[in-house]
Image (cartoon, chains in turn blue, purple):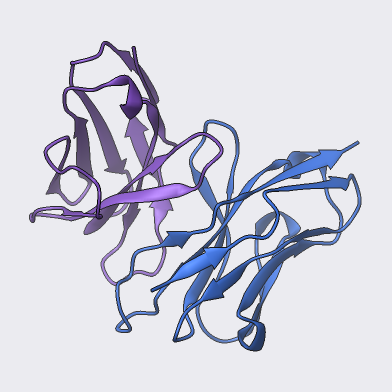
Length: 116
Length: 115
């Protein structure tokens, strides 16, 4: 079964500082991995995803994430935080096609606060 | 492209009434739609998966008679919360996926408050 762990339910950074949101997954086979952002009272917006190929994935709003199979991790980073980055971030995983159930499993989320 | 809408965005109802939430894929055909429930400051919990023209598959612990899901067309799925109670108050989010696609496109969510 898939599971996702997001370390740190709350992360605070200063504006302009590095953002690092951690995500680890458990899976017997390499899964597809996703990061979503959720603003208050809104649905989820896809930031980036890893399916196959290059392990460093670039997404929208300057975010990127690196798939590290040896560490079963998919941490989200951004070099310089902006006030508009304050939101809830969810890591999600699903099986690759033909390798099992293909619904998404979400982590518990990390609330990012950006301090002026 | 790949826009998913939900209606209504907010609904307040009395205990015992039924509420219908619509999820539409506006610019693509969604063979599969998903319904999630999100409690305050919690993650999304998958409630059910619906495929167009067939019965929905409910996750363990989700009452199928309480949360009725219909996916009658490739662009519309509905979730009906029957005989709603205050504990059903939550944020309900749908998502839609193209046939053979990897990505789910999420709707903006519906805030249900049951008095």
